[in-house]
Length: 396
Image (cartoon, rainbow, N blue to C red):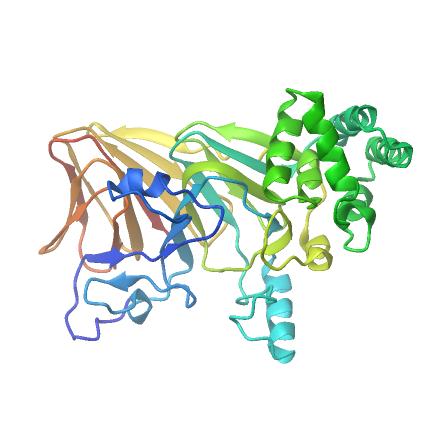
């Protein structure tokens, strides 16, 4: 529910200022190229449009958007130059229990040892704005076993060779969870400095292999030496989305985005349970509790597409109650009027267009965000001299 602005004035459109997160995996160019801003000297990973308390989005006058509305979804522009952590997100039940337990233990929300930042689940969907590489879900264990057999032939250590062959056999027997546990066990041999993980990737590099799974894992291991998260990557699906294609990541799905620019929508949460490829807090025990070990195809989501008054309307409706997403592609000179009866966040990704609602107008350009209360007026989208792309997030 939208409340009145603290000034007492109710608007139909609110331009937003999105904070930028400077995580190490971010790109120095992708967001600046999108927004036509100067290149950054430091990584820019995410722009947040929403009401999560850890990273407030602001209105033009500096007021937090959260003072007007409590949105169940969060919209991000995500720019990855190197792999994100191997991670999964909890169900609501896991989140409520984990958040309460860490509160009871007196762990501050800002403490880097914290796993649960809130009590919500975090299903998420990413729409590629560029070619976008990601690792999502577990691939067929038989194929993963073939990769482990390849590595066994590359290494010179008899003990390691034997271990890799045994792990391949376990994968073929369907023991995916057990192999995952072997790799991420913090007391096991794969976490040891200059141990088995380093030995494996030294051998992979010497081999000159062109296998896409091994090349991807080697690149991750180069960034994160001695981190068996790069070996976990060999258990996962590796895909590249073309611009416009989308992934839906349910709670419990292991994943790691690798490279590219995308627009994300997710439940309002910052709960990330990490298992590797990161300098942040890793909690492999908790990760093992929430991960779904069922192998399957990458979770691509198929949108509905229609044309209305020359405007291409693409609707993404993942199977959650927290959010849906509509993409509007407006040719130059076109316009479209839509009904906006619930709160929405609009984000531009291409061209410069205009939103009009009631007496309010707002320019929307790549990287800009607009909050639309949606409780009074219809919403007009228009393109003048440019083709324009606008994404609008809402409840389903």
